[in-house]
Image (cartoon, rainbow, N blue to C red; front, side, top):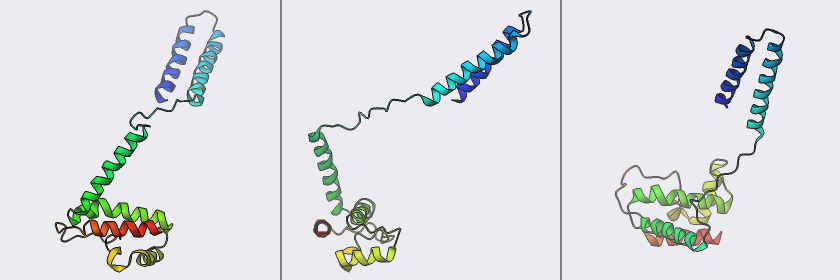
Length: 161
């Protein structure tokens, strides 16, 4: 838009200079006004026009392709359950915490006390430590994660909500 405005002002200046060569000086005001009107109409068209939404071709509308991507993503997440504590904290903990927030409607940012109380009722103290977004390990990150059994139990409890 800045370029369009600069080009418009340049057009007005060029018209004014070109009209200076005309013997009748009263034409300068009319020519400048006409050039300014053209620039303003062009700017109005630029601002009001409808820009077509770009079509996102990166995502397939094919249900089979969507299912394959979901299965691959789920497979990756499940394999991280048997990996290290660092992988669990980086990949699984945020997903589980987000799913818990969505399932219960409890937002940690709104009321942390009720969020933690609800979580302890749903998961219990022994499983909540693997979902709690505030319990990311700073030490022992190379230790093994809790495993698929814990992930399976967490998912079962999330399903029951």
